[in-house]
Image (tube, rainbow, N blue to C red; front, side, top):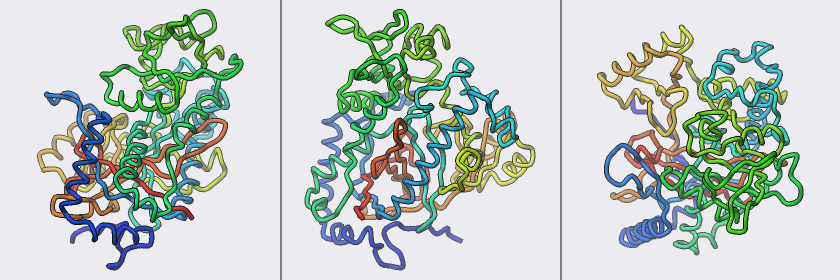
Length: 471
């Protein structure tokens, strides 16, 4: 029997309320006009330089991310519930990080196995006992959400280190407003353009103890060869702060300084877009050419803030993910507003047995994997692929988790034949500092291939503008 999917626009043959204005818009759009506008969008993306990089496939690694003009729409009531759930999750994840780098109460009480925390490769012993300013480890939390019904939203994974894609959220909106100004006049769509302002305010609010006066904030990038360099440059520009590489910063005494044409300038907050391992060659990888020698000593002594904090990655590990509902109950004394997807941990004997017996029906992911790599989508795989993946799981069971193949919701999407439903997910960006804030919207990723459930841009997915209607 064919699986049915929730169509976010149409229910029982009629357009749902959030999409009613769009029904007339798309029906009145001639195919030639649509093609013209699609070409215009691609030209804008190319002119602005909105690309991402895919390495190891030969040719030019810089790709233009596919943009679909049909927006995804949420009612104000839908968004209000999502916002409450996302903020709740961000609070619990940060409470967990403060705890496991401190007394470890959640482990002591047996709520989470200690081996998943303390033997995790993302757990950084260098920050044990240190509490960052305002008790915030993860300042930008990207929560990946999927929808399966009118009221059914699930968290697919948490991103607590350096979640990417927010530049696409902002540029998608900018391009849609430029191409279809009438559409925005006719719909009461909440703006997202305050994100850089809120991000800068969030970063400034976690300035270190030794900061005096207005904090100096910088964005630390690995450089222009990084796949997300466009975003690093975009955000630094939008916030009005310097974009720096490791070689632009140095440690002297108790502080970090930036080299400028007018001499050294003290830096208070580093929004880093490089991995923990490369931050400081004196503390982590000694061969790192991207970091700043001595940075961690300054960080631990309260001379600089690093956002997100080193060690934050232990909270977004896919094995830890299964315990986030328990974190919410343990730290907040609340029931989760947003639910996890049912998850089997292959490191558990019973779970492993079930997964191996049902591989053809499950999605299996590497615990530390990302970007759609290192995963198996059972229903879309051949028998040979399933058998090969089973051997990988058996060789290292603890490295894998499995989840059911969800009936991801669909949103109308412009394709060559006209308009057709395609599967989507959503990544809102929750900013955590003095306050917890998020703009009304996020990055909607769409699987452009018919029937595909993989939305990652590196795997052929595209992006859409995400609308939240005013109440």
